[in-house]
Amino acid sequence: MKAEGGKHELIIHDHTVGQLRTMRELEEGKFNIFYTGYSREREQTFIQINIPLARGLLGYRVLAIRQVSEDLIRQLHGFEAFKSVVTLGANASWPDTGIMQSAGLQVITAPTDALWPMLKRGRFLAFPRSIIEVKPELERFDTDANNPLIIAPDVMLAYRYDTFFYVAKGRDDLARIVEDGLKAAYEDGSFMAHFNADPNMAYAIRQLKDHPRKIHWINMPDMSETTHTIPEKYWHDPAVN
Image (tube, rainbow, N blue to C red):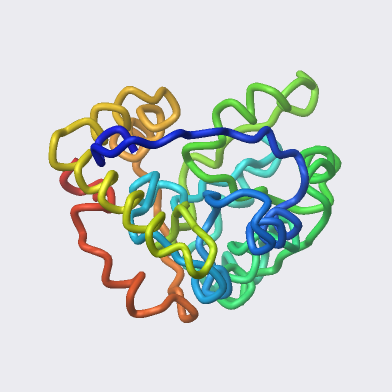
């Protein structure tokens, strides 16, 4: 908003309810902007600002696993073998759950706060986490020296996916302000300066560059043409970065 150049006030609400309720409250006008992961439904319900906020890194999913499962996963060659053996944990309301299920992956759903404990108990084999989320989460939940958790070193999932800003229908004025501000921040370099200074983003980029894994790419059949054709300059490319 600062880069857009107008006079604006930003008030941040500490919102602790689930994503579905938050979406309803955005529709009801309890607040006027929200950022969340892409879904076709959200894009149709709200105005989506078509600049991915994490440059697509949210779609790079490393696998948190128990260390005892490492050899099993290493022996799976090809996506068909992976699909036939690996069970994944996820929350039913997450957009990426549907993405994985549409690709034929076996997904076991549960409330968010139950997923890490379920992984530790072996209720599913792997917990896909965004490469920008996994480090602090693993540090928090890897607490049992007799049952250590690790990131699978040889394989990961990926799909064209990220977080976007959404505003309520009818707020084209606000959508323009946010879009113009993001584009101006790209032009003056402040977006990338902020992006590169974020420790989780920096960790993710290092992981992709220094620890290459076999990537099983998943198609996004429900992604709109508008989102699919967002210019490449707004997406991180591990091959050139």
